[in-house]
Every structure is written in C-alpha cells, then in structure tokens.
Length: 197
Image (cartoon, rainbow, N blue to C red):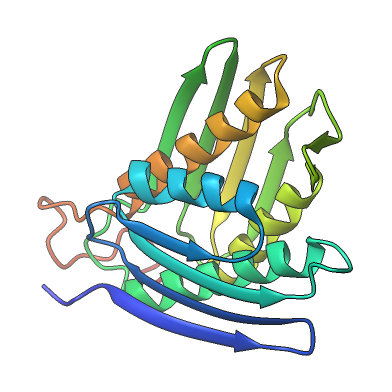
C-alpha cells in the first residue's frame, strides 16, 4: 500500500500556508494559524478523521480572518487530493451524524472528482467570540473546490452556535474517515462505473 501523505504550500500576497497531512494517521494535529477557533475545529477533523494534520498560516488577520480561513480550506483540500492520488480501493462515500448536547449535524461526502457544496447551517449567532460564522462556508468551499468532492452539510438542530459548528466539523472528520478508508473487498478496483474519478 502506498503512503498517503502530502505536504502542500500556498503563498499569496494575503497568506502564507503550509499543510502536512497523513490520511492514515492517528488523529494527531499541530496548528499555528492565528485563528484559534478554526484551530479548535480543525482538531475535530484530525481526531475524528484519524488524519494527522499540521497547519501553519501567516495571514492578514489584521484585516480579518477571511483570507486565512478560505486559503486554509484550499490548501487542506489540495493536500487531501495529493495524498489520495489514485482513488482505487477507497470506499469513496462517507457520512456521519454527530450530536453535541442540543445540536445535531449530518455530513455526507463523495470523492467524485466533481466539486460541489450544499451547506445548510442556520447559525444562531453571527459571531463566536471574534470569529465570523459565515467564514465556515468559505473554508468548506475552498476544501471542496480543491479536493474535488461533493459535500453536503446540514445542521439539523441546535441553539448554541459553537455546538452547531463543532457537530459539523466532527461529522466532517468522521465522513472523511469513512470515505477515505480502503475497502478490502474492492482491492485495486476504481469505485466508479465510469472507471475513473
């Protein structure tokens, strides 16, 4: 089995980002991004996806967090795509429901090679501390466009915006884990009737 790891850098006038990940990890993570609430959420991806994930970002957060959040989504998406390389033998589809107290979210992902995001999260607050909740769409859109996945995110209920977002990220991690797992029954078969993804 090939090593499913990647290191990706992205440098723009707005951000300088480095991402290292291992799709077959143990859920270890290290972050230095200047966006602490997103770090807490990315830790959920690592822990529940069993993906080792290191993210460094030096962004123009003095303006706001938008560029950093979007570009981290882009760079993580690129890293997942590079680490995955050939999609032969993976389950391809993943889904998860995750509760946290009163909140419940569902995430479904397809490593189809076709980017698409459907996100329905009726945030109960515009901000969590200094973090703008609308930026989560930017993170996931960046990921989707560069990992080339179809991603459906639904927060089915929740009164606390922190709980809403945390259930989404935990479910996202678990859905990724399921979709990226190797299926022994598939062996080296491409999980598509088209023969390619």
